[in-house]
Amino acid sequence: MKIVIAPQGFKGSLTGLEVARSIEKGVLTVLPDATTDLVAVADGGDGTLQSLVDSTDGKVISSTVTDPLGREIEAEWGSLGDGETAVIEMARSSGLALLALDELDPLTATTYGTGQLVKVALDRGHTRFIIGIGGSATNDGGAGMMEALGARILDVSGDPLPRGGAALADVETIDMSGFDQRFRDAHIEVACDVNNPLCGPDGASAVFGPQKGATPEMVEQLDAALARYAAVIERDLATDIRTYPGAGAAGGLGAGLMAFAQAELKAGVDIVLDAVDLDSHLKGADLVITGEGQIDHSTIFNKSPVGVAGRAAKQGIPVIAIAGGLGNGYREVHDKGIAAMFTLVPGPMSLDDAIADSESLLAGSAEEIMRALMVGSKLRT
Image (cartoon, rainbow, N blue to C red; front, top):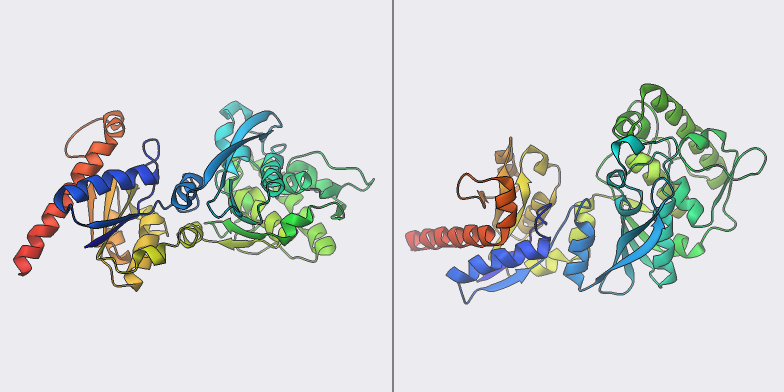
C-alpha cells in the first residue's frame, strides 16, 4: 500500500515535514510494510517558505534588510533545491507582525526590504521567484520594492519620492532606466489569495488599510494616492492595474509586481502544489493523509487540505485529514473531497499542552485511523 502524507504545518507547533513524519510514525505502527511518501504543503501564507524548502531539499538563508519603517532586521528567504528558484515571503521583511501596535503607519510603511531580499536572490543567481504577499504592513503599491530594484519614482521636480503610500499622491514620473533587468527577465509567480482591485471601496486601502492602522481619513488619502500611482503607471509603463483582480493584495504590491515585472498572480496553494510536484507523488497512491492546525469553514477557500484533496480526486485517491481542531463549518470540506476528518486531541487539554505534545498526538491519531481502516477492509472481505 502506498500512502501519501501531505499536511500543512501546524502554526506555532510543527513544520509541515515534522507533521508528516509524526503521521508516518503512526501509519507504520499499523502497516510496517506500507510505502509512505512525505510531502510538506502550504497555501502561500505562513509556512510556505519552510514547506517548499523542506520538500525540495533547499535551504533557508538570512539576509540583512530594512523593515517597514526602515530599520535593519534579519529576514529569511528560501533557495529551493533546484538552485534556480527563490522563495520570498514579503511578511518576513515588510510584514504587519514586525511592528508593534503603536508603530503601525500605512502612510510611511514601505516594501523596500522585500525588494532588498529579491536583489540578494538575484545576486546569488536565482532566475525564478515564488513570492508570497500576505501579511503586509504596507500600502505603497510595491513602490518601495521597485525602488530597491532600481526604479526611480519621481515627483514633478524630478526628485525621488519619500517612501510610503502617502507620498504616491505626488508621483509624476516613473523612470525604469536603472531597473534590474534580471528581475524583469525572471519567471515570477505571486502567491495571492485575494481578488481585490487596487482602488475603490473594495481596494487595498479601504479593505486592508484599517488593519494596518489607517483611520477613515487615511484610507481616503491612501486610496487617492494609489489612484494617482495607477494613472502614472498606465502612462509610463503601459499597464492598467486599477481593476485587475488581486492588484490590491498586500497594499497594492500585487499591482506593482504586475506592472513593473509582468509577474503572474496565482492561488497560493496551486503554486506550492506545483512546486513540490504533488501530482507525481500521488501516482499509484492508495490513500492520502493531509491536515492543518484547524479545519473549519475557511478551509474550503482553497486552503492546503482542500487543494490536496482536489489533486487527489483527479486520480481517484481517497483523502483523510487530521487537524488540531475542527471549527464551525468543518463538515463543508466533505464536499471538497475530504472523506473523513480526525482531531489529534484525544480529550480535554490546554492548547499549550497540545502544542507541546503534537508529535505523539499526531502519531496516535494516525495509528487509530489506520486501525479503523484495517477493520473496514476486513469487513468488506
